[in-house]
Length: 325
Image 1 (cartoon, rainbow, N blue to C red):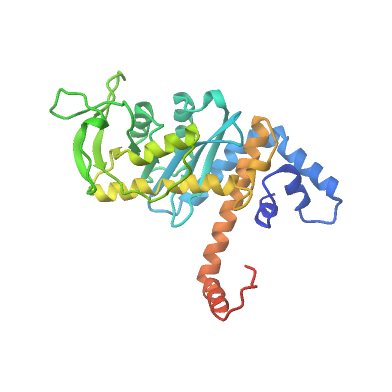
Image 2 (tube, helix red, strand yellow; image 1 turned 135 degrees about the vertical axis):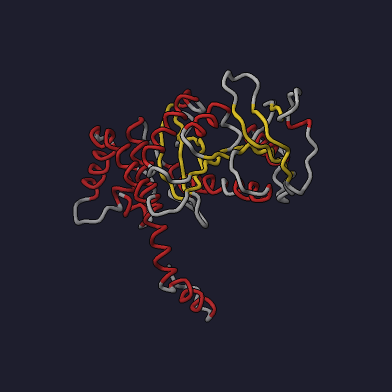
């Protein structure tokens, strides 16, 4: 199914079936995909498959920078928690967890997912987890307990206290500038019984210069507010300057691009066209998408090493725009 997806199929049952190789009738291919998506034995083996993929990808790397985020999958009834390896260009999906919408942002689900990810990555491998403002103190504390580093964003009414001070502060109490600075070392959030310590970094990001329509949905307004608010980052990564911490966090956008690549019918795998329901079927589709992304990434590396991109550029410069890559 991953090969069919790479050959142009959409991430839907019928499209994958029509694009399967072989001389069988189309209806039989569609039934074959349907049996694969509904195979309970395959559903049981999905965690092991993801663990093997993650270990094979990360075993040869000196260190790993992993972005973790939530996304709707593929509608409002289901959500996906994913960990993607940050690379040059697009990120590589490593592990995913499909849950009902009412379990989205659940702390127990997130910590259990971290344990699965920790078991899949070789022991002693330096790992840095990058997350947005949706992940809170329990998440950072669990990462520290695993011996990893974290970098996350603090937004809204979340309070923090700097070392040597008795005052609890919010991001609105700080004056941000275009130059990133280290605010100091301190503790995040006053409510948890077990505090979480780290360093705080602040920067006012420049405007991207985008101008949309006057009428916006609730989600667009939230994203607009997030973009206008200064970046207050909470991190336990040592040995990096403030501007390096900001650059590290900015790579988190790769996982957002990864979600868009899988959902977009026009520019990606077209998951939005899928009507599959049920935890098992959606989990299989997420693994198929991850395997297809890995195949495309490896193909791109091979073509780059064999100067395939340079040949295409020479053809385009000569005026032949009909070449199909």
